[in-house]
Image (tube, rainbow, N blue to C red; front, side):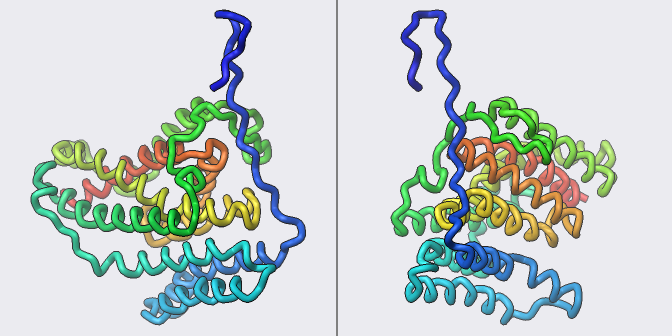
Length: 316
């Protein structure tokens, strides 16, 4: 940070807000193709199929993987669509990883034993190890695509950068992300905890039972927040922003993240909408600080709450 030269009484200027990339006015086809691809590879087709017909067939996954593969071919033959080539590769890899992860068993009893080998450890260790491997593979792919770590937000970022005001959504002032991240991090966590409490209705005895699981809850929440940010959000923002602009990239990443929670925790239509809002906040944090920290921090706090209630269910 560059400091003033006026002596001890001169305060350092706050870091400027990150400049958002505007949507290229001459490429509506690129924006449309990016949005269509995002919707087709998201959980949206699975939701419609499940709700209208029944369990989604295995071929639907193959069909979804084909979508970004076809887009990649199109980027090779069309100069107009060329800006989406990295995005197509990343989305294809993401779908392959999502399809492959359930088939990989990385259970390590000795790792589970580090936290007491509780039911929560047995549930989370293998799952989180596979997700960490997927995140590392995604990072390697981004590097092979010619991006630098700073290009896909693999750094702390400008922790005190001002937030970009969005008055209509309740962000009228350019508050520091240090203030905004702390307030919203704990606020979102508290709201999520209240909703989960009234859904699950645990007793004091239920919470007492999971006390031995607290260290592993915190550890795996930290790991999960990192892996999901570096697998689902950072690659999408990094490859979409130069092609369609910051705003479209932000909303597309939020939609992809949010609708995936329709079958997760919290689930259903309300869970999906709330997760889209959460994804928007996390993506905004990445874009405006050009780093991972605040997105990871807010995600980490929320995961602690979610994992607490998962632990309660497992203990029961």
